[in-house]
Amino acid sequence: MWMYPGPAQQQGRSYGRGCVAVVTGASRGLGRELTLELLRRQVSVIAVARTAETLDAMRGEALAQSSGSAMYIPCPADITTEQGVWRVEACLAQSGLVLMALINNAGMLEPVAPVARVQHPWDPAATSALADWRKHFELNLFAPMELSRRLLPTLRATNGRIINISSGAASYPYHGWGAYCTSKAALDMLTATIAAEEPSVTTVSVSPGAIDTDMQTYIREKARDVMRADEFEKFENMYLEGKLLHPSTPAFVIARIALEAPRSMSGHVYKWDDPTLARFRSHQDAMFSPVMEVVPAPAPDEAAFPPEMMFDDYQ
Ligand SMILES: NC(=O)c1ccc[n+]([C@@H]2O[C@H](COP(=O)([O-])OP(=O)(O)OC[C@H]3O[C@@H](n4cnc5c(N)ncnc54)[C@H](OP(=O)(O)O)[C@@H]3O)[C@@H](O)[C@H]2O)c1
Image (cartoon, rainbow, N blue to C red; front, side, top):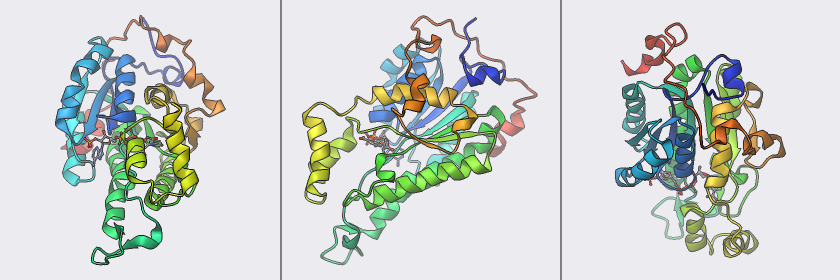
């Protein structure tokens, strides 16, 4: 019988059917590839995004990746709303699966404007209203915080993981990216704080590098006039020279971190290609083998996962 190697096994727990990860921003870009990568590893996914049609359009590919061994569960929800977060909880509760990881991936770059141009909407010189910053923080910081808070009781019970998708912008002040730089820096500190407060949950920030997604298209199409020329050209040249990463590349590493990261990584921020993450980039392990014998759904261990602990918040 095949079992996932690594720390999960050391904790006496096997992955496979019966395990699920929540991925936000699952319909496009990095989140889509994270979803497919987890399914490829026979881990079911609750795929969260606002647009139900895009999630539905992924269904065929998602099922093909999972070879029928894991469930693709589309969960259309705006995670910046109370109702949206509740929907994610409801999808999880209805799935009857054991939550192993929450990947807070959904994020936005806009508004792109210098801090000095952040004004009230009635100011004619304004390019970015404070309300836009608040909307930005709702998605990039408060949604990950609220989802983590609501799913923590379950993640504690499973010794699960929270992966927050960060950015190099968390530690570099790109001109005009004030909202994004500050929200990602705050997200990294949220990672550290949850790690300090929750010893049974492994919480990690990962920066995925510059990837070829709609966010990069937005930079090229909308941000040229606001950004500093050299900073804009860095991204434009990466695109023109084909150097933007395909999202499946960091997704391969991040999916494995979500399933295997040891407790010693908790509270830290990593770039996806950090040399210390070499073991998560290895293609040589059993997990990458396309021919995997899947662990039958681990019958939830009543003692380890009493239903009232797992579904406390749903009742
Ligand atoms: N692209 C890069 O170069 C890059 C670099 C560093 C870090 N990152 C980070 O990587 C993550 C993914 O970026 P990406 O480039 O893949 O983004 P993307 O292509 O713009 O996709 C964003 C995803 O988030 C979803 N989403 C947006 N608002 C939402 C909401 N309110 N509720 C639920 N879902 C929502 C979108 O679907 P709907 O529109 O249907 O809701 C979509 O699935 C982000 O955290 C980003 O900051 C990206």
